[in-house]
Image 1 (cartoon, rainbow, N blue to C red):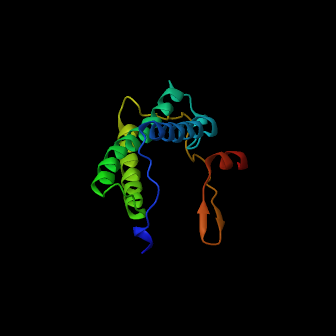
Image 2 (cartoon, rainbow, N blue to C red; image 1 turned 135 degrees about the vertical axis):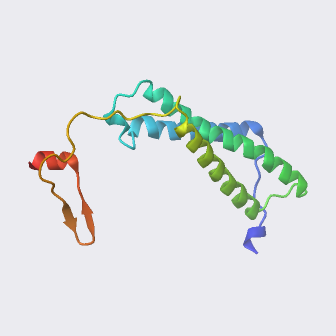
Image 3 (cartoon, rainbow, N blue to C red; image 1 turned 90 degrees about the vertical axis):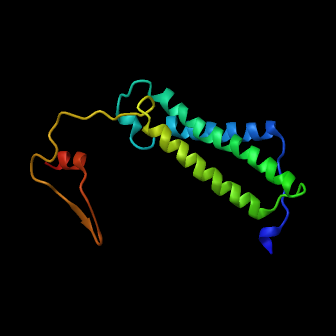
Length: 145
């Protein structure tokens, strides 16, 4: 069976720390430079510092899972299989999601997008329809009016 196929295992803490640091840096680079989720549109205090905090959502789960992997590797007579890698990857994604959610909901770290003073949909509304989808875009409506 392919899931029982033996694969390489990284037992070095230094290699794991390098890998987790690289992944965390890529995540922070995407959050700060590419600015998804409209983070570029608002002036939030310490925005970049708060976004750098998301690196912990990558670092901590990978380092924590390395402890579990090491124990499981020794328990399995120093043999690492594909099914073990898939299970630890799944657990890692779950842990990263839990840490990300808790990080995003803490009042200290939350990036609150401030409201605006202009009225929303004060005038006539225009909806764009294409086959089975519909969309209303406030900036587009402002331009069309």
